[in-house]
Length: 76
Image 1: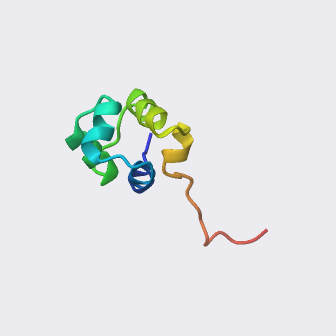
Image 2: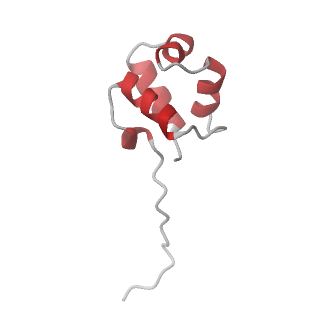
């Protein structure tokens, strides 16, 4: 499960949460949340679920799109 750290941070800040207050609400350490937002850590699904719950969104809203595009593929 690959989080979209930029989107998590954007939504967190949009809702007026500071890093520490949000981390406390999501029951994770603020340093861990910071690493998730910077793309240095990939949290377990239950952590993603807690983050999504506090943000009031779906997990899919804060996941990185992992579908790969192959633009060099010939048209058929």
